[in-house]
Length: 82
Image (cartoon, rainbow, N blue to C red; front, side, top):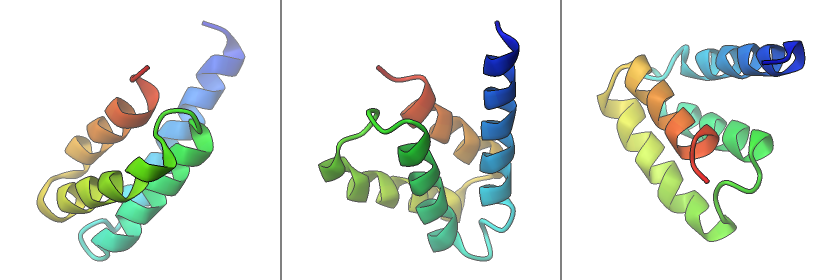
């Protein structure tokens, strides 16, 4: 792993953690921020037609789960799928 890769990964983890900071207080904002972050970071991972469905999925998880579960979903949807 290169230093550049490690820095990008650390920055992405920090950005996700910031988005999750008040997820139970405002789950709609949390879901929207995660979708925007994912699309900006990985533009080819989901199609425009799938964004609303993914938003609903993130909204449900932000409302009902803990931060670790939401973080895992983010990386599953955006970072680790082909």
